[in-house]
Image (cartoon, rainbow, N blue to C red):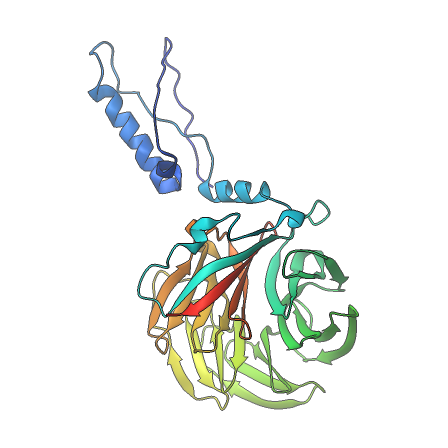
Length: 354
């Protein structure tokens, strides 16, 4: 949060009328730039009476991130979820740069209701017409239709943090501080099996009857659904924060970089060092080998392509994205699902190859 200086009082009445276009106040940087211009302009256009050393332009203490959050919190409820024709038209603006894909907003869902407070959504899945979310701080899964209707939740004994799809009716969930993996039927909302990992781990992904997850900083363990360890893969990294497996490769992030490996443990590529990237949260892949990653601190979704050598911003605040965390690519319908860690915001984007 920014510290705002209390304006000094002056004698007499001062009136200042300004005509400022709304777009000039869209971001913190723009607001600060405009305040400086206002301050500079006052003495330049003064009639010469009095002194102006203490003149300042003061903006109310509204953080632009909170501005987005305020707009979100006061936007339509889940019963009034909107499509591209109704809101967030800026999300359909052509993507900058020469990216391999273009995106347009299909649906925005607000899953926060009065009884759903203090949401902390860390993972999401789209299976058919159903969306599933891990609500970490409230020890539960949240389930709804893709149009934002028919909300249900599944209570859990611990904090769910990662999640992967087993089939159209089943997900595997990992807890933040527990060694077990419950296999949950989302139709019956019941745990049908529990897997014991013998250690705390990060990330989880299901592929061809096996679960992949990170143990410690340099090991990916492969386990079947009967608790049997199939193999381990050693990887050089600062730690394994999230992992996704697709076809014959696995992709994981250690927060700073993203790595691609074969399922036999051979490195295929690693992203080039980017000093501006410090905190990737979740990763997912599409059918073309592109990787999508959430960068919560900067309100962006990054796309990594060209065998890891190109990294660009795909979505950000100007697209309505606020604190993205969970991310999932529906390969059947080419839909990218992004969920905000706060406020219960979910975005579904149609993705097209260029």
